[in-house]
Image (cartoon, rainbow, N blue to C red; front, side):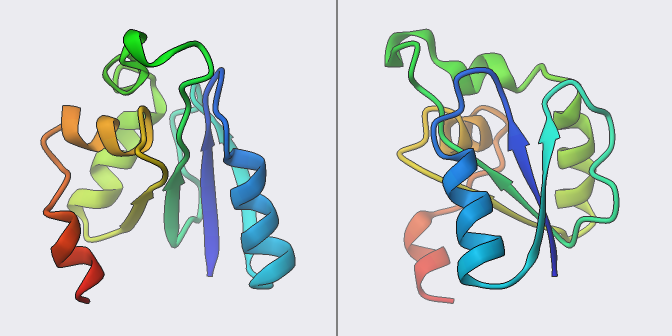
Length: 110
């Protein structure tokens, strides 16, 4: 599989995600800067957490306006796999802010 790992200013686990995907799982993974408008040939997208500027900024709510998020929304709408990481002031809250986050317990039961 080919993974796109989104990179925003203040992302805090994007490098960990790349390491885990490439070095531990042996998968192809690349960074996608938040200002890009395409995910390329990704089979799955990883939305890392990011709250190094502080939780009070609601960076997930801010990040949803980044250009790459339109591509992520289209990707998900077409059945693409999207994983939000962390308690995720960015990953999970971003999915929540877009109304895309399902029940986390349902995900764990798959």
